[in-house]
Length: 246
Image (cartoon, rainbow, N blue to C red):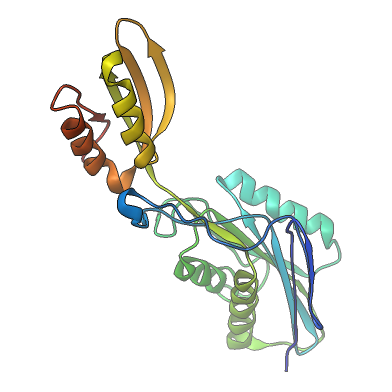
């Protein structure tokens, strides 16, 4: 038998008969619409804020904490924060992906004293299958006096991680590519309109005899944007995408 409590951090306090959510953000996804109101699918989900849940399995408490991280150092800081918040725990097992969910280079996992393969790996598997990137999960265990065995531990750590992801607020991170463009002042209004339609971000802009701009463009629609710029200016202006084939 196990029981579950949930909490995450957001802008308001929301209450139900069994749960209280204390937070500064409402758990919704950011939706980016491209030309013709087509949803941009490029990217992956990332955490917004921090989420915590707790389950109890045979008197052992498993407290799960998740947050966004972008490096191994930030993952370690998350572990240390959990150690400070729950200083008397038996184990601080963890798993993290500080890149995209399918990035095979930016990840970590730790059993922290539990039998090998019973904590970090099951937690990592749950993270990887969730479609969420840039995420760190720490499961804090208070031993309840009853050994769970290899299978029991794997199930407990997997469940603790899965439960906390259910209440984790996320938004979609849109992948972008660097691009550059150079055009006459006569084309400024046309270019600005097209860039706005395709959600291109102007990183740097110089005004001389011509306008030169460094851009961050949505990866999924980059080639469409390149064609649209050419057509809208009747071939006068060309958008250059840096590392176009990557």
